Length: 589
Ligand SMILES: *Cc1c(COP(=O)(O)O)cnc(C)c1O
Image (cartoon, rainbow, N blue to C red; front, side, top):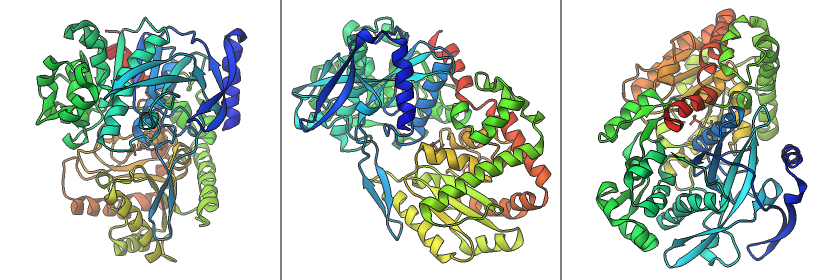
């Protein structure tokens, strides 16, 4: 990975004149000295600024926790492919989200991720500051270029408050993603929103006329724009907002007293009645109030959001994934032969129906072998290449119900008996404060022990982008069973579709649009919210009566479904299509 980074940096520097470069030792935290490459200016002129609390630019830069950060990264990668004049702003998150270790009984242990920004990014010799409480907090920008398929680059700016002169607490504000208490979080959002707008100015990016808030964490940027003009319509003409959360509890809210303490006069009084409810500042409402365009991330999510926020007109742009990033090597080879040009035009994946079935199967088995090798290396458990393999990997949290499949072990044995053998691969982190989510990991470990010698279950620790790539391409079935309507979109099933792996899922988020029963995969339930019991029975029944029998006894039909996943779903559920919709509906109109 470091090689990759070096390569990218080399590409970058050959495009720039060397005179702009300085290399300086840098004192970080007053303790560790590290060499940073320092740029004096950035030769870009972006028109759109994309703000996100987390962005995954590369799997070994741990500035992301999961779906939202991966989506932001895929969005930026597609913007680079499409030559969109955009700049992305995020926090440095120098200690990452966390690295996950797992004890004997499945207990999660969290460790800070070790990451030195100087090894993969450039420091830019510019600075700005924001007021937080009684202190003036200095912010400096790190820069990472994301290069598109034709060499076009999108700058990603990582904000860093670990700067000489800042107070002890202020220096930690860009350390932990989603860490700390409410005060820490609000301070982070001041750095992202207000600091973000100011850093754009400090970098000389004066041509920006669109600010895109990817979720409510960045909503304070609207106040920075408003305070300069005191003109709501002017701010609205510049701002667009994407919501990612379908339930009220998921939206960021801050006690108004805390807001007063940290922001003082910078929070304009006349705006308060529109965005404060029950004594809390609602960050989603703040973002929406100042935006002329608002969207949810799937058609179903639009409907749910419209009910939550009846005063606003909400559109939908369904999420996607960056096709060249998520197609595994064996399928990349296949697409290059049968669908030349697919990388720059993923719509072309619809021609996957012309790929011979035996080639699809061969590529899949190669990806499966690679995953099973990784499983062996990391867990010392040997899975069987010929046995039907179910994958479940995502954030371990209650509404995603990671324990649904293993909640009735006798039923699993019955499925094995009646339909055929199978094995299960799990992966995922629980947020450090999510006790329910942590309990679910323990439950998986308990099931693993109880089924020992009968059904193999493995848990791969420290889920990240690299493990996701192996899993979405290497399993035979992608399982996803969120509780309706809690999943705004979900994207891992789209990654699986890019590798010809069908999904079995409740009809929530994108699957309501992507599922054609028995053609691109299968549904659990009928799309209406129902109880866990009914949905679990339906899942077991489909596995026992339809899915596993077809896998073993109707291989031709199975591969037909694999091909449909690519032709019908990968061709549409990609960020190229998604970014084109943002450009037409949110950025340039
Ligand atoms: C794609 C991805 C996610 C999102 O998974 P969902 O099932 O869509 O919630 C989370 N984490 C990582 C590392 C991913 O690659």
